[in-house]
Image (cartoon, rainbow, N blue to C red; front, side, top):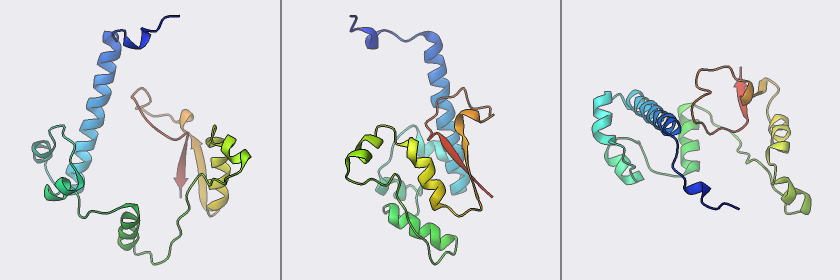
Length: 151
């Protein structure tokens, strides 16, 4: 058995592809910050420079409006959307029984059905991500295996 495989050098092709993917993600992120904060890309680059900011530092740099947790963000989003009443549901719902513990080994097997049953019928649900026809399929991505198509 060979144990040194994870420590072998990466190929030049993989290195180039990974670097292009990282640069694409970073450029996209900077563009979204620029658009969302009404800043030029040069202004964003002066702030960013590849660094990671704490929440307090991000607020000081004008990158966020307020500090808070998920509930604060949901309340702010509801306020912006002028929604007075809304529900929150966490998925997957986990019960402390034997079947649910084993279900965690493949959480997406029941997740689709649970989400589908919880949404109003006007939601057209789930396009398999593997069937998407897009020009970013070759880039490094992290996704759940489904997308919501809200009409």
